[in-house]
Amino acid sequence: MPKIRAVIFDCYSTLIDIKTNEEKGEVFHNLSLYLQYYGAKMNAESLKSALKLERERYPYPKDERYPEIDLEIVFRNILQKEGLDNPFLIESCCKLFRVLSREQFQLFPDSLPVLEEMRQKGYQLGIVSDAQKVFCLDEGRMLGINPFFSRVIMSTHLGFRKPDPRIFMVACTLLGILPIEAVYIGNDLETDIGGAKGAGMQAILLDRQGRSINQEPKPDFYASSLWDAWEWIKSNS
Image 1 (tube, rainbow, N blue to C red):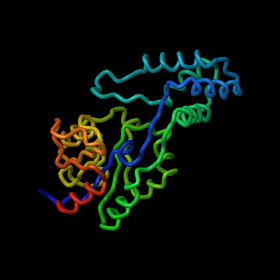
Image 2 (cartoon, rainbow, N blue to C red):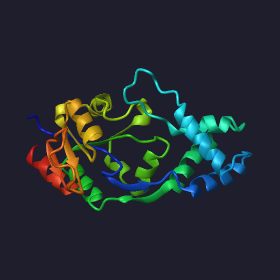
Image 3 (cartoon, helix red, strand yellow):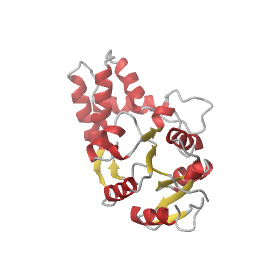
């Protein structure tokens, strides 16, 4: 087995402990009040209905098996129908929607110390995440993890999401390594482990709850923490 030269991470629920609830009534109530300052006429219910409709009619590429939705395009379409076509307003609506729907947002306790040890040992570090570009990098900056990563690949930049192997291969290409020289750490069997293995990478399932043992697809290693994952990487490098 070739030496591991790079460690690529899933972001949310792997490094960042986050919980969101986009169905809360106060999300749409407060967002509609914000938009009224710019002349929008929508109330909470009409905004919620508009968001649902625009998501349903999103122009997905027909040839993509795992297409990704871009929240900025969704809000742009909503606001244009209100006579508002302001790039700042589109971006701010996305971010306010995210803030209002967040219920938990922090790093897992092992995220920073493990990243620091990996960096000190000279591993290239990257992220491959099904994430919205409008707030993913900002959230990484807020939590202090961005400086560890030389490449951050988000599904909204590419238009397709995990488990499409291409998103993992893009990361390897940008890091200048072969897929077999990288290990991916993620918390989902199908999207993270299946996608990474499909791209020819080694893969570690981070299962903090101990619920996925002996399920398919098989990872190269089951880890109950990032420290477990790090020990396996060191022993296989």
